[in-house]
Length: 178
Image (tube, rainbow, N blue to C red):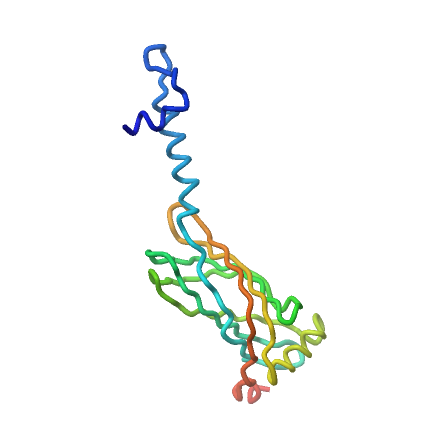
């Protein structure tokens, strides 16, 4: 029975001695159940599918990072926030966290995008060359982060992946605004 399974580590505890083991057993069983709840959520597969320059001037650049996410779980993943780090060709390109409202369907896929504002000329001259080269060749990337899930346990799932991406041509709209 349930009481026997949860109480078995204490063997000698009984209700007759003035000590009630029931609250302790219920608390321990609940804690064990909650601790293992996080292990029930498998990490999604996340990939960087594109990097696009949407705004370009001497004071800064705005990039949109587009991602694909695949949910291996038999239940949907309601994502309420994303923490991320993106390295391009071995150099930190962007990192941060942002609120999100993404519902990744059960055993399904979803897309999302993050807008990142940088000043590559001032903060990372080596990244300026990587971005320029990525118009001509695929650039290796490493992606890591965490999805904060909007579920009662407050669970989060980490992701980590690597691949290669080519910068999309600078949009004509970004060039026209400056």
